[in-house]
Amino acid sequence: MKPTINIGIIGLGIVGCGALKILQENKNEIALKVGSELRVKRIADLDIERERPVEFDRSILTTDAYEIINDPEIDIVVELIGGVKPAGKFIMDAIKNGKHIVTANKALIAQEGHPLLEEAGNRKQDFFFEASVGGGIPIIRPLKICLAGNKIEQVIGIVNGTTNYILTRMSQDGQDFSDALAEAQRLGYAEADPTNDVEGFDAAYKISILASIAFTSRVDVKGVYHEGITKLTKRDTAYARDLGYCVKLLAIAKRNNGAMEIRVHPAFIPQTHPLASVNDVYNGIFVKGNAVGDVMFYGQGAGAMAAGSAVVGDIIDIARNINCGATGRISCTCFENKAMLSMDDVVTKYYIRMQTADRPKVLASIANIFGDNDVSIASVLQKTRGHNGEAEIVWITHEVKEKNFRTALAAIEKLPVVAQVSNWIRVED
Image 1 (tube, one colour):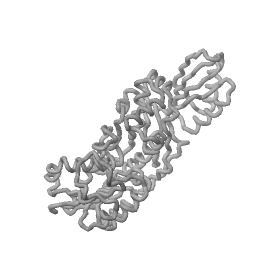
Image 2 (cartoon, one colour):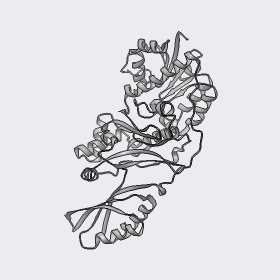
Image 3 (cartoon, one colour):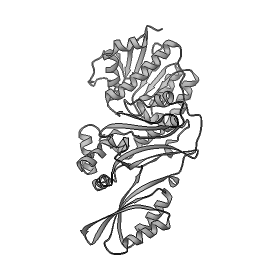
C-alpha cells in the first residue's frame, strides 16, 4: 500500500471547499479506512486571492490546472469547476496522464461523459461521479453496485433543491412563484439567473445520468423532454392540495416496451406518495427494481458539505482501489442504445384549469371534444368566480396519450365559451 496518496483539486468553489474541509477534519479516520494518508498536494483555481471558508496551506494554490494534470506524483484529480469546457479537456488530459478522476460535473457527464468513461475504463483507471446527482445522497453507486442484480423498471425523483424549495413555499405558504423565487435567491438557494434550475435543465442532466445507469443505455440529453415551473401559480398548488395532491418538479425515467421514457416536468403526485414529503431543498429519488421492489433515497441535494461528502466518498473508494491494485473495475455501463419514447406517446393523467362562460351546456361542449379524442374524464370541479360572468373549471383526466390530450386541448381553446385555458399539469399516481 502507498503510504501517501496525492490529490489535486481543480476548482475551489462551494463544493471544493466542502470536500477540502472534510478531508482535513476527518483526516485521521479516513487514513484508517484507506490504509494511507490522503494528501491534497495542489489546488487550482482562477481566483487564488479570495478568502475561503476553510483554512489550508495557501502555498499549494495555483491558477494553472496543468500543474495538477502534469504532476507525476498526483494520483487522483478532482474536477469541481463545472460546465463542459474546459472541464472536459482537463479530465481527458488527466486520464491520459494516468490520473484517476472524481467529478461533480452533471452537465459534462450528461453531455460528454461516455468518451471520458470509456477512456478511463480502457486504461483501467477509476472515474467516479457520485456528487453529480443528489448532492450527498448515495445513488450512483447503489444503482451500479448494490442494485446491479435488478432490472430497474423506473427511477423517479426530486433532484433539484432550488425548485423544490420554491414549490414548497408556494404549496405551504401560498406564495406566488416570483415571491418564492426571490426568497430562494435571498437565502442563496437560487442563482441570480435561475434559468438552469427553474426551466428544468439541471434536472434533465441528472435524470439522463440516472437513466443511463439504470437502463444500461446511452441517453442523449438533448432528446430528454424538460419543462420548468415558471407557469405554475398558487391557484394550481391550492387546487392540488384540495384534490389530495401536491406539486413537485419530477425527473422521470421508465422502461416502456423496450424504449426509455425520460422526462422532466411539474406533476401532481398524491399526498400519500413517499416523494410528497420531500420538501424545501431536500432531494428524494424513488427506484423500482424487479427484485428489490421499491427503494427510496433521501437527503440534502446540494451544499458544500453534502456534495463534498459524496466527493470525498469517491476519493476514498479510489484510494482503496489503488492500494488493492483494483482500479478500473467500474467503468461505463452504457452497453446499449435503447430508443427514446416520444412525448406524444407518453401516457399519463392530466389536470386542466380553465376559464369559461358560466352558462348551460358549457361543460357538455368541452366534454364532447375530450371524448372525440379518447380523453376520459375522472372528475370535474367548478368554482364560479363572479367576474364577467365566467366560471373556473378544473378537470382531472384518466390516463391518455399526450398526443390525444394536446389535440383535444387545442380544439377546446378555440371554443367561443372558453375564455382561457389557464394551465395544465400532468398527474403521476
